[in-house]
Image 1 (cartoon, rainbow, N blue to C red):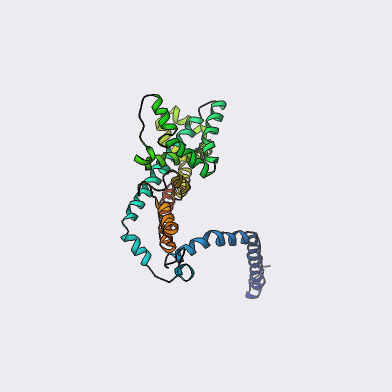
Image 2 (image 1 turned 90 degrees about the vertical axis):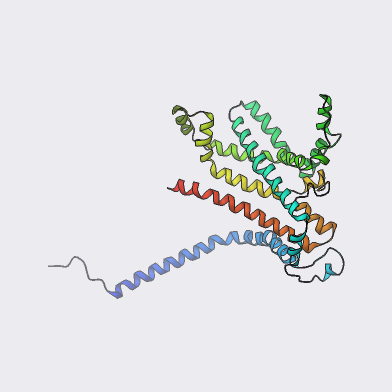
Length: 319
């Protein structure tokens, strides 16, 4: 009887293994060649984004100054700047004002208003959609310095808002002196809502209409459809939008500086304004850099919280 299969020998396996190793080597070399075009981009990111962050951290451990002998020859002081920061009575107030500014103008203001506008624009005709979208986006595309002066002119003691209130017999307050944080929060909401609106418009357009129609047939009203159908389906967009606008708002400086200069006193001095004053007004570059590092930590904490909020939704979708 003739054997259907010849016995396999160790010698016969060797060419197959060598062929597999050769193909694996070619795949690795092909992968490296595909990564080669992105190397310049990675180097630029490291140089212009990671580089300044690393340098700020290094400077925060020194007594570097804007002028004087420590400007040329700064000394290593370790954690002295951070110890000074924890003992600075202005730091807790500045930190609290930053959290209030971020939550008030980004997490609540821009996010909620942007979602509301996106939902409303999905129900109006093209003309209304074009007018409202153009009006909202106009504030966003303005240079920040122009938007800041426009907001200052609106909230100033004799500005547009008080002129309108005077026209209806109401004596308006000096918003920038009596309610500085409210004024800068509203100004930042006005300027930044367009970004959230566009993100949510794109997300809502990706929601399959048959799902909302099925929920309507099942008797779900508008509020229930929004809460149990629409919002869960755009959860990823919500978290991404929150992360982006939070980081943008955390870094807002020009708007606040033009409107209030952080005043009166420390009433609107968020961390960026506080860091600028310490670094450039009082010429303590090392101390100002320590404040900037705290800002980086705060931004990282917000980002981690938003990224963690994505996990349950992602796991549910995969399952």
